[in-house]
Length: 76
Image 1 (tube, helix red, strand yellow):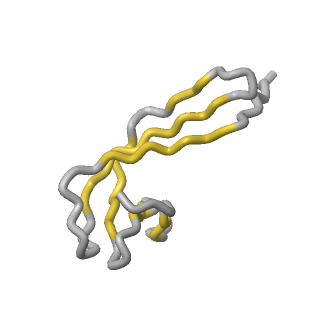
Image 2: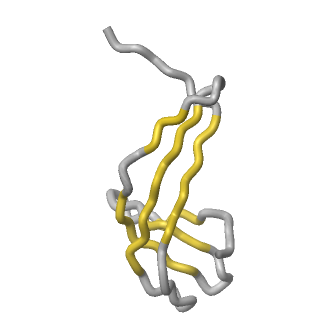
């Protein structure tokens, strides 16, 4: 029997060094952290994904399956 665990928050941490501001792709390390309503955490294994900074200075992650460029809504 499978159990279902509700998670109240999800955090995505991205680390990438020397990302040029010209849209060039570089490898970034992503970690996903899920938190339950009572404060228990589940962390993913680190994932290496392509990231870039667009002309407006926003950080993007490239979906490895669809190649969609997903804006993170932040400027590093």
